[in-house]
Structure formats: C-alpha cells, structure tokens
Image 1 (tube, helix red, strand yellow):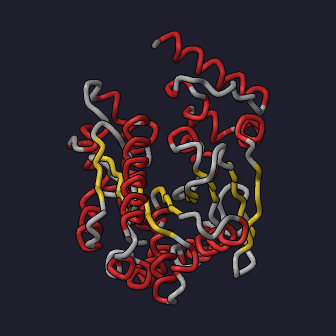
Image 2: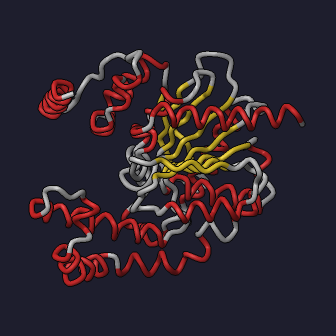
Image 3: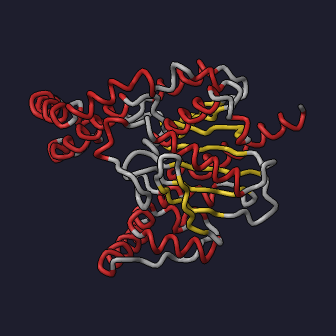
Amino acid sequence: MIIRSCIIASTLFLCVLSHGCELPAPHEDIEQDPLFNTKLITDNRNEVQKHLMTHYNASIIDIATDDNVTLKAISIPATETVERTIIAFPGFYRGVKEGMVPLIRLLPKNYHKFLVEERGHGESDGYFWSNLRRYGIDETNDIKAALEWVKKHTSPTIPVTILGLCTGGFNATRALQHLKNENKLHEYNVDSLILDSTIVSGTHVLHAGKHHFQKVMSQYFAWLYPNDSNAQVRERLLPKLVWYLLGSPIISALTFFVRGGIEKHDPETRIDTNIQSISDTPILALHAEEDGYAPKDHVEHLIKDHRNPQDEVHIFKDSSHANNFLKHKVRYGKIVKNFLAKIKAAQNRE
C-alpha cells in the first residue's frame, strides 16, 4: 500500500511538472484502473480525453441550449448492441465532465454514456459565480438541451436514464419536473433517474458552502487533536468557538448577496415540494451515511414523498459526499445495474 501510494504521488508530481500526464492503459483490475484516480483525471483534461478517445472511442460534442449557451460533453458509445443511454451530470463547481469518467467502468458496455458539463463549468460556456444568485433557474435549460441532443442523435426506442451527482441531480430533477408540467417528458423516453449525493433545494447549496468552510477551518486545529477525525475536531470547544466568533460571520458576509437571490428563488427551485409530479419515473437514490454537504434525511424524505414502488434508497457507510462510486466501486456498479435491470423487467411485463 505504501509503495503504491508513493508511485501515485510520484506520477502526480511528474504530471504537474510537465503540465500534463499521459494516463496508463485501462487495467483489468478496477481498483488499479486510471479512471479512478480522481486527482489525475480532474487535473489533466486533455490527457483524459485523449485516453478516452484511444481506448473507448469517445468523442467531444457540443450541445446548444435554448438560451444560446454551448455545453461540452463526452460521448462514449456502446461497444455492443445499445440497450440504454445514460446521461450523467456532475455536481457543483468544479463539476467537470472528466470527474464522471469512473462511471465508464462501472456501467455495462452496452450502455451509451454521455457525460455533460453544465454551464459555467469546465469547457462549457456560460457564467457560474456571477450568476450564482440564480442558481437552479437557468441550469434546467442544460438538462433539457442534453435530452434534446440525445433524442435527435440516438434511436428513439432506446430508454434513457439520467444520473445526477450532487447539484447535477438537483438540476436534473427540476428539468424533469418542468418537462412533465409541459407534457413533454414522454418525448425523451426517460424511464429512470439516479440521484447520487443530491441536494433538494438551492438553500442547501448555502448549507453545503458553510459546511465546507467549517471543514476547511477545522483542519488548522487538527494538530491539537491528533487522534480525532475531522468531524470530531469540528466538535471540539476551541474550533467551535472560533467558528461561531469568526468563521460563521465571515461566511455570512461572503454569501450575503448570493444568499438573497437563492432564498428568493427557493420556493421555485426546490425539488421536494413537487416531487410527485414525476412519480411515474422510478428513482434510485445513492447517498453516504455521513454526508455533511447533503444530509441523507433530505433525500430519504424526498423518495418517501415520491411514492413510486420501484424507488430504491441505498446508504453507504464509510463514504463521503459524491465519493460513493470511488469508495464502493463494485457495490455501486452492482446496485445501478440491478436497479436498471428491474426497470427493464417491469417494462417487459407490461
């Protein structure tokens, strides 16, 4: 383990020096496959894309939204007869498409996979920070545009699954709710939705930001409590005192203008109040037990209110926010495959 860590660290160091790093060839052992080295894949976009084009016949595509924003996506074609299309959306900033490439190894080879960056992220056009007050409003256009692109460029008989990570799941759910209300959802053949580490409202983005700031700040006190985890350090008296006297006022000031806009739009953007509108679409929820950014009880209540008998909730222990497919690779892949096989079996019985 120590030798392997040293090799990975050396590889990353050399990558930084050379401003790029050629990824090793795909490995038969999923634990050693380069697509699961997130530091490597998120910091070396060009090399990742080159790797995917060489080994997975991938292509980079442009997707135009109705409000004239060009999104970038990675298309990975099925290597066997196509059974399903998966459209995956990464989460909050940085939220790059390359961060979703582990799904290529976890999902069946007969699935056509699209990894789509939302506006203001990675190579996609648009603005993120300057438009943060409206977060959750315009992003639905990105999901709709991706669905429209898939509809025009793939077979209309192939079922579509949307997989959203963190806010990617939030925005995807909102888009499906919009399409359902417009009586257009049936046009895109979406038969399932996968929510991984998903938040349920824009105000929860503020909660996540506050949690992240507190988490980073507590690291400066870790040397005082060498035997404590980061979560335990945050509960110690001194870090809590510094947080309440200094950290909390600072984060409140930094988010003052953003908070006003997000809270204003919250009744419109939250997905839990209207989740029954898409009750015909089965949802698979995947969440970490200790997710400080998106508490699991939020998504558990969401699924309970959704009321589809095919819904599933899977909670991962020894995991963290948006890391389920990295820390529990085999289990994650098996859960997704079994869920989608169940959906297919139900459709065949109809």
